[in-house]
Amino acid sequence: MTILFLNGPNLNLLGRREPAVYGKATLADIEQMVKKHASKLGVDVEFRQSNSEGELVSWIQEAPGKCAAIVLNAAAYTHTSVALRDAISAAGLPVIEIHLSNVHAREEFRQKSLIASVCKGQIAGFGPYSYILGLQAAVNINGPPD
Ligand code: DQA
Image 1 (tube, rainbow, N blue to C red):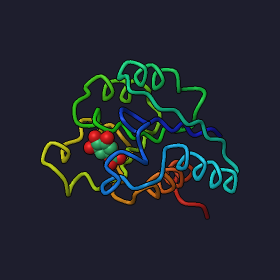
Image 2: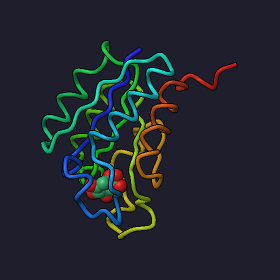
Image 3: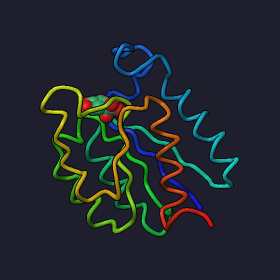
């Protein structure tokens, strides 16, 4: 089973970008942590980041048949992108929306997600641990283990 982690714009700056909001871990640190947990769970993880909306759309389009689920931190595109929403809807595979920060406790424009209604669920506010929770949600997408 492969779980695809997609990261949107400015997440390549993690570690030095507003550390009071997003923490000190870099995206590479988070990727390493996710891969460590994934190997314990016996699943493969592919981890990607793009600042380009179109590239994220293409990766979502290419995922069906290759990945069991997508864990998506769409970053700012969460709040703006009909294109990402439509790609998720068309892909027909489970997508889990994640955020490092609690978007619901921040500016009003961050409290609206254009992708939430086509995602399986949303995880927000746990810092890098949101990624581990996203991984666990993806692995247990068909219900918790017996
Ligand atoms: C974010 C929250 C978004 O509002 C913001 O644009 C980001 C990061 C998060 O992980 O907390 O870039 O998705």
